[in-house]
Amino acid sequence: MIQDSEWLKVESLDLDAQGVAHKEDGKVVFIEGALPGEEVQVSVGRKKNNWEQGTLTALRKESSQRVTPGCPHFGLHGGACGGCKMQHLHASAQVAVKQRVVEDNLWHLGKVKPETLLRPIEGPTWGYRYRARFSVRYVLKKEQVLIGFHERKSRYVADMQVCRVVPQRVSDLLMPLRALIASMEERDRLPQIELAMGDAVIALVLRNLNPLPEGDRAKLRAFAAEHDVQWWLQPKGPDTVHLLDEGGVQLSYSLPEFGVVMPFKPTDFTQVNPHINAVLVGRALRLLDVQPDERVIDWFCGLGNFTLPLATRAREVLGIEGSETLVQRSRENARGNGLAEKTRFEARNLFEMTPALLAADGVADKWLVDPPRDGAFALAKAVADIAQDPSLAPGWQPPKRIVYVSCNPSTLARDAGLLVNLAGYRCTAASAVNMFPHTSHVESIAVFEKA
Image (cartoon, rainbow, N blue to C red):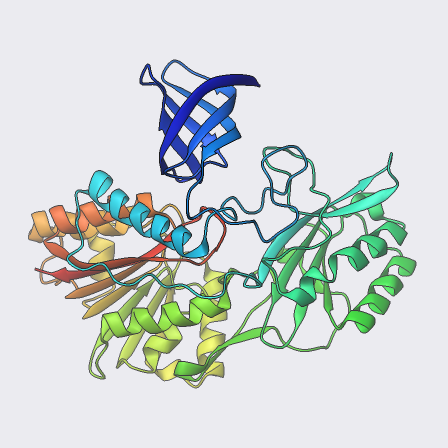
């Protein structure tokens, strides 16, 4: 690190929650821990021809939005937990930053400007995280076990005793879990514990590189009984996950507005923040404004998080996902909620969509699109290609409305550019979704209307 004596005026935040400033010579400087409007000095760790990166070391003018971080493990220097990056910024200001990120990406990357900016979706800022993956390390020199997220910019596990972003019950388990793992025979072959909470149960998935001896299994059972948790074991990949002992409460979460209950396995993809997910599903359906006589397609449907609520409103919903296993699970969830007759599920490679494949799935009045971080480029491009050359799919008509839920503002902007600039849609509304408070992760929702 090189201490720079120049005072810098911080202009904005980037997508990694670093302050952005310019030196007198015009070089860009990215500053961990700095906030817009502040005047700071920096310890520079990386230098390139056009930019530098460093950490705040002195503060001459402080932002009115700077707050004391709520977690004792938050920090900028060695040993600090890297799980959150924005705890020093007021929660409402975090949301405003994320809203601006969505706007800027849509315009600068997609040349799209929403006609209306909706109020961002936000909720609890602490205790919201129902999914987490904690690393486990037995430190031989200290003869102790560490359980938590990695240290900032490090492969080492932070020495975490509490975690404010998970529910209090889970935070209270960190130290007992450390003692449990330290007492186990296989303690140096247990690299990870994955948290998955449902409405009625806390599931802990222990990654075990070797089969567990009976003594270790007995200790897990005793811990489960004392702390009211459910242990799962994962000897290899996600498909090998199984309950330590059969029986117990089924993992599930509910969407009360729609009378839907969603069973899931602890390694299934479900949203980290159930409070925001419930609000997001409700807003998406209201924006889509599904009518009883309409057919809807839910692209990247997963376990049916949007499909099943849609089926309570629409005539028919087609859910499409890339995995045949997920499709089977979605069908089971539809049957369990009495919605099998109004839903159909199909497996497709959605990253190789073409106009012909799109037309084969038939005409739908409306679409719900909820892709992974890579976005829905092939899908948007197929729609744009047909708009440019209708002979590619004779008789096919595009949906009159699309609601796009995104976990990556840059791929949303790319796909929005295709829909608006080539496929004849208007972007009528957009907003940020604060699914991960105190992190730089940005989720969003956008609405497209056929012009």
